[in-house]
Image 1 (cartoon, helix red, strand yellow):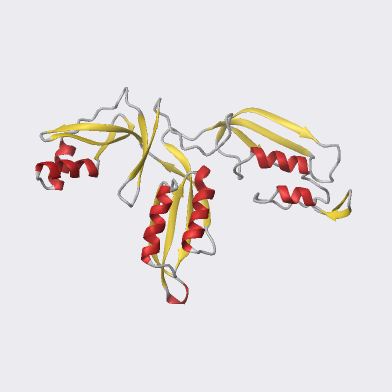
Image 2 (cartoon, rainbow, N blue to C red):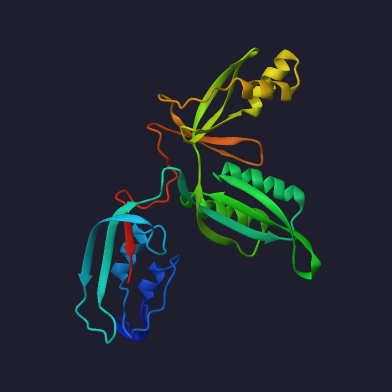
Length: 282
């Protein structure tokens, strides 16, 4: 936001001005060694409304570049604001998600189990825990949650509320995924539903749904693993041409959240804005 002091209607105050500081709440700031007001209330308001994440320039195809120039001259820095508009170049077999983690050594297993279920219900893509040795030789766990960027704030608030933790680490990560579609195979005992995943025509995986296999096993009085093996054997590799692509997120809890989209493209939104805007705030 800059450094130094400025004069406002109420007198002299330090940078950023009170109104600007209020608008900048929740946004990461970078110290720029310039004795001037670099962020005005109007500029802060624009960023607050338009930007929903901050960081380095992402991998993208640049389409347009715009500049705005200020009237004040700085000794060693151009007084310019640059806006780059483009399309993110995340491949169709990858998406960007948030990883939230916290270390816990004073929470009972019952609370952890309850919290995991609540996180899944709140939209988490995956939740898992890792046993670790913490300070003072205490056994503890790392609670890890993978979620979409759009859901990160709500999921993080739930982690704070349910665990009582004092801090949560955030990391934006890119993951490779298979395209997915609902798929049903015919066995000698009837149809069994499952998920078909692929990255290309020669790389296909079929996974029978546990609940459907259990249903057939109970109806026929068969061992579950026998039905599961039969469903795998009944699968014939084939890419669905007229199937609605399903992005299914499997979790430790044995259930999945399926999000269907027409056209077979991924919709794990990281909110690069409708036109793929990236805001480079100098």
